[in-house]
Length: 399
Ligand code: BT5
Image (cartoon, rainbow, N blue to C red; front, side, top):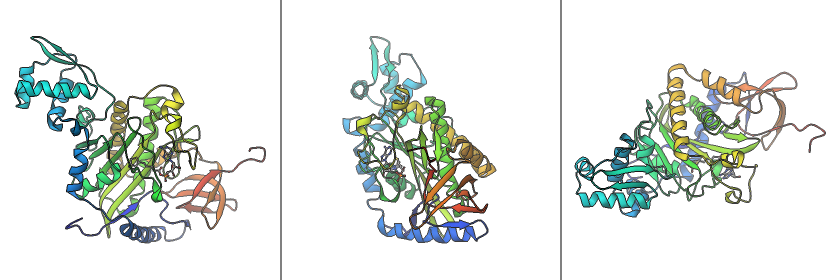
C-alpha cells in the first residue's frame, strides 16, 4: 500500500508454530519470537494491495449498485426505525434528507426492490411494515447501545473477505470497534490459507477492528474472547448448546458451526490493530457446505429447524462482544478464561494432540494466560500446547 510501512499481519489464534512448551520454560519470550517469525512469513505472502481505491471499488459493488445513495437510504431506514409503526410524511423525509419529494419516492422504490415492505398512504406518508433479512449498516447501528463495538459499520453485498476489507479500513485509520459485514464472501479465508465457504444471504461473515493497548503476547486472548461471545450468542439467541474447541472453533453436537480468523498488525512491542474475523453458519443448508470438509459442519438452522434472523443475531453478538471486551480491558483475561473453560467441550477429558512431528496424550486441564491449552500428561507434568489438532481419545469400544 502506498506510503505504508511494512507491518506484520499474523494469525493470532494460539498455534503460531507446531511446538509444545514446558510450563517452566521462557514461554513469553518463545511465544513472541515464534510470533515474529510467523508474522514475517505472512508479510511476504500477503502484502496488501489496493488501498482506498480498492475499497471504493468494493463499496461500489454493495447495495449501492441498485442505484440509491447509501447515505440517503440509511437515513430513511433510520427515520423509520426511530418512529416504529408510524407514518412519516414525504415532506418530512424530504426535509430531513434535504432531497426532493420525487427523490424520496425513488428511494422508497429502491428500498422496496431490496425487499423492504413500505406502505404509502395518501396524506399520511410512508410506514415501514417489514424489513428483509439484510445486514445493512443503518439496521445494525440503530440503537445498538454499545460502548466501543459498532461505532462505525460497513456493509457489503459481496466482498472478497471481510478480514481484508477490515484491514484496509484499519490501515486508513478506522475507529476501534468498526464492524465490517458482508452478505457473501468470494474469497472467505480460514487459517493457514484454507477456504471459508461463504454462500450468499444465509450466514454471518463479519470482521471487527480492535485497537487494544495490551502487550503483543496477550493478543491471542482476544481469540478466546470472541469464541466465548459467539458461543454464548448461539446459546442465547438460537437456544443451542454450543461449545468452544481449542483454539478457534465453535461446535454444536460435535460439528463446526463457527470459525474464527483473528489477525494482528503490530510493530515491535505495539499492537496497531487486531481484526476479529468471525464466520457463523446460521441458515446454511446441507448442499451449501463444501464436499471436502476436514470436520463435520452444521448450521443453527440445521440444528433447530428454525431460520435465524441474522440482523438480530449480529446485534446480540455485538452487544455481547462489547460487554466482554470492556470487561477484558478493565479486568484482564481471568473472567474470559473462566467462561471459556466452562464452554470448553474437552475440559478434564483425555485427548490426543497431533502436532505433525509428534503426538501427545493427556488430560485437558485448562487454558493458560497466553491462550495455550494446558495438558496434563500421564506422568503428571503439564505441557502447554501452542499448536496442534486436539481430539478426544476414543475408548476401545468406540468406532
Ligand atoms: C476457520 O478456519 O475456522 C476460520 C474461519 C473464519 C471465517 C471468517 S468469515 C469472516 C472473516 N472473513 C474471512 O475471510 N474469514 C473470517 P480453519 O480452522 O482453518 O477452518 C477452515 C476449514 O473449515 C476448511 O478447510 C473446511 O474444511 C472447513 N469449512 C469451510 N467452510 C466452512 C463452513 N462454512 N462451515 C464449517 N466448516 C467450514
